[in-house]
Image (cartoon, rainbow, N blue to C red; front, side, top):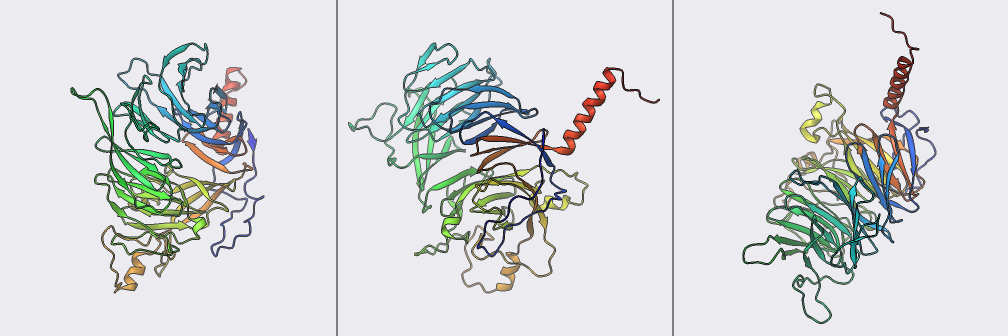
Length: 510
């Protein structure tokens, strides 16, 4: 276990922003991660982390390797080889209670136009979906034939209720647990004829399905360039031969490529684009509940919908990631972080310059306080989530705390950001500016309480384990397991006392 120095070693990189980068000194009293383990197994950028259970996780990246780790000890448990190019997506397929074989599956997609399905944790039970057969990597024995992928698979999604999984690239494919191709959408073939599995979906050569989510009524939403396409999955009936995928609707409200797509609750899903457009959609009728068009757009169009303004430079407003809970959406916009409250229908906190470079991943931490603590008032707005973690292209991992602002006068929301306080129509006459200012006041601040310095290049994402700490992966080919120093010290002391007691060297006074 390595000990690391908190703070020091990194200064703001000559920011021209009016809002300077927050820094923190060596006394990071609220930062529990004071020890780290450096895990080495990859030979290229590590882009993905996925949690397998309470103590294991898998990593994957541009070297085409999947590594399974023990989050408690940092031990490498398993290395899965098979891809010849970088991995583009990874997801787990949980076992069914009614299924005889309760092994968990790891699905990985690659730029080599393959998807590997690995049984966890047995390394010999690996099958590959490719242009040829499915094969066992341990014996090389052919298992069965499946159809090929025509392009790189960019994303994977599991629909547990239907017990199927989807792969998205230039087409959308539906598979069952036995690796049978149930249905497929694609563009027209060169001959102009469609196979029995192909539907006429006009995907342009440069457009890919970059993200997939499940929504009600057996539908999925696919992000394809600037568009959202709603597909309905039709189960087999007595008069049909098998599954079918129907295109239901196309949503054309975005002006640039969609980078983020998530469900936020049972009523809404959210999308974010390369130029900072953020749209909240109704999950049932797919209408826009709230939308944004950047102020720098040369031809802004008046819209009856509410606007969410991300007022930053055009090249610094990309929405790379967001996460959510029942009350809030936590948005990574360029170098900044924003907390948007769904119930109050507006921003309650923001940090416009959270990092030196673009924020790539953001997540919330569980509350560490009891219900009787003085912080329980936050449950009215932000539930049990007081702390956020973010990572960036600048190589930093930062911990933030959501704190109530103590101020006499209302502080307005920064110009142009999330200028929304309802899902209804905009009052264009603005007859009560003072009341508007009060309604738009920032109620909370994001205060930096921890700065984890360990990576030398872009930190792609992270995982949080309640009992075992924080895991980060980076373009420096490393994985770092950040440990709670106080907890680890207590565990070491406990093990020492147990060993002394076993050897008879520990005498307890009665």
